[in-house]
Amino acid sequence: MNTDATLMNPKDFEIKKLGPSTFASPMEGGCFTEDKDAVLFHTQYREIEPYIEQQVIPPAFEMAGPRQSIFFDPDMLTCGIVTCGGLCPGLNDVIRAIVLCLHHHYGVKKIFGFRYGYEGLNPAYYHTPMELKPSIVDDIHQKGGSLLGSSRGPQDPKVMVDTLVQLGVGILFAIGGDGTLRGAEAITREIEKRGLNISIISIPKTIDNDICNVDMSFGYETAVAESRRSTKTAHVEAVGARNGVGLVKLMGRESGFIAAAATLANNDVNFCLIPEVDFSMESLLKALEKRLCQRGHAVIVVGEGAGQSLFDDSRGQDASGNRKLGDIGQLLRSAIKDYFASRSMDITLKYIDPSYMIRSTPASAMDSAFCLQLGMHAVHAGVTGRTNMLVGHWNNQFTHVPIPMVVHSRRKVDPKGKLWASVLASTGQPIDLT
Image 1 (spheres, rainbow, N blue to C red):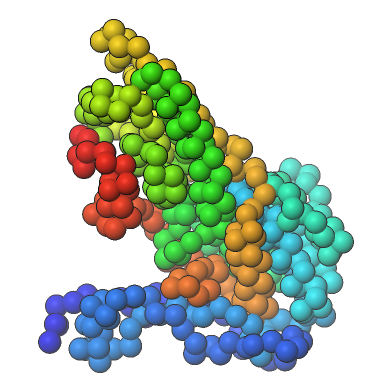
Image 2 (cartoon, one colour; image 1 turned 30 degrees about the vertical axis):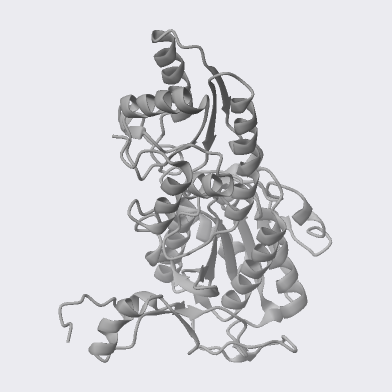
């Protein structure tokens, strides 16, 4: 028996509730989910085996979905929605899904949209809340950006809770990334101090796909699909010139999922650089020179957080509390030009940074369907009085994830995992570029 295995604590997976559900759900013809339904955390038998040996129930997420009984009386319920952080494909889709589900499935009449992120919950900014109705959100899913606008940076939880109390908000839906989730957790703590019945439900928004314990976040699939246009363009430019180099910088502050997936989606990429795998400029340039001598062209894809060890560490933090990054794209652009100029070797370098075009584009068909389900599941969780949680996706199922499980670290590409091995096989780049 393997008694040395460290088992996860089931309490870490528990979802907080404001109280018992005493109202019958007004949803008709729905496929209701029971509270005991769960999605296993582990996917392989060898991971579950220690729990079996010790006769312990394996860890699992609560399954998302509508319940037969709910906590809030829909006739008396007021809800709020806020979008925070950078723009991301699918924000409007999620807003629309929440509004339509609240209105049509539960009969909620009053829904506030708070403008420009958490600023909208601080009266000092004078952002009048927008009252959201089905007619207002009718076609917003066809547009990029966020109907409500967005901003970065925290606000005082006491002030934000004061606003929720003043407006009689029972559920706040917070759509955003790591900083937004930390803000939602801070709001929850303030609500608990006051003993209020206000639910905080989050929908994770990160185009980088780097939220822990969530295997996919909305906007990521669109970002990869749109990134393919840039890598394809870079390849066309590279092969169209003698010693042509196409350099594409993609999103990915701490995690290289977009760069890795875009590389696999267009296997004309010859070098993929991500934050999780260090490289030295000298090794990269020598490998690039060898590639040009052999094939006459090259395409490089780099995640924005890659190669940060090449910069000094005195740039500070942005409004969201993230470290400010050095511009790896511009650094590579200059270094490549200087390197080949010093060798009297003519090259043609084309640099492409499509980040903001990707962030502002409407969601793809797959992402749009995903956003619809995220928004609906967020509503189903909120009306049951669940709080301090987010709607996740795990093992092809929608789940309830406690916010404390996702704010402690970021999900990253495993340099020894299958995804990165596939990237190395596709590009043919050296395994070690340090």
